[in-house]
Image (cartoon, rainbow, N blue to C red; front, side, top):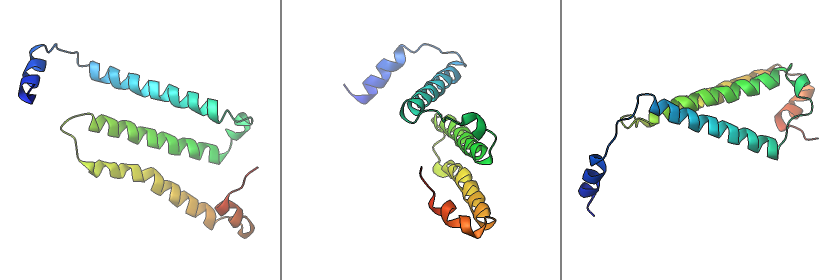
Length: 127
């Protein structure tokens, strides 16, 4: 079968869709991905035992802010690239925004940290 014949055959039985169809499909995909990610997170890493205490610390909210920023940018980019007329890769620069902000925050924290804790902050630790 030739490509033109296939296109002609596929376009003869086109049924109209509602304007909400696109949004519903994307919402379903995002919610399914969120549920799968949470399930994998809990199944592989588990839930922190000190979650209620950690919720009152700055690093906890910084990680949430970083994650939420990536989610918002990811949703925006997926909506942008879902449209056939949008194909410019220049919008991918938005992904650098949370990384640059996190790097600036890390530099600020390192600059204002006591000298004896800089090695620990830079190299991390494990329990």
